[in-house]
Image (cartoon, rainbow, N blue to C red):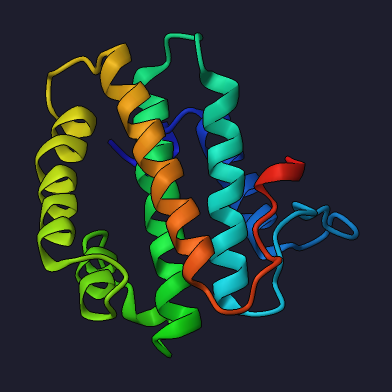
Length: 170
C-alpha cells in the first residue's frame, strides 16, 4: 500500500500527534501539573502517582486490560524513581521493561526472590494479556492494582527525600 492510499484521517492524526510532541505552532503547552520535574526521579515517582490515580478511576468499569497495563506502568515508574534517587541511575539505563525489577534487587529495595517473581509476572502475564489471546479478569486487575499500590508505597517510604508523592492529592 502506497503512502497516497493511507486514510487522510490517519495521516492528519499522525501529523497532529507529531506536532503535539514537538510542541510546535500551538502556543504554550498545557502540562500535567502534578508531575514534579525537579529531578528525573521525582518525575518518575509522580508519574507513578498519576497512573495509580487513573487506575482508581477505572475500578468497576470492566476495563481490566487497561488496569493491568497502567499497574505495570505504575510499578515500573515507582521502581525507576527509587533507582534514580537512591542508586544514581539515569533514565537511559532503563532500556527494557524488566530492567527496573533487576535493579530493585541490586539496590536492596526488594529481595532477589521478589524481583525475580516480579520479572516473571511481567514476562508471563503482561506480555500474554497484552499480546496474547487471553482476556484479563476482574480479579487479575484488582490484584495488580493492589500490587502496584504496595510497590509505590514501599518505594515512597524508602526514598530519603520525602514529600514528593502526590497520591493523596490526585
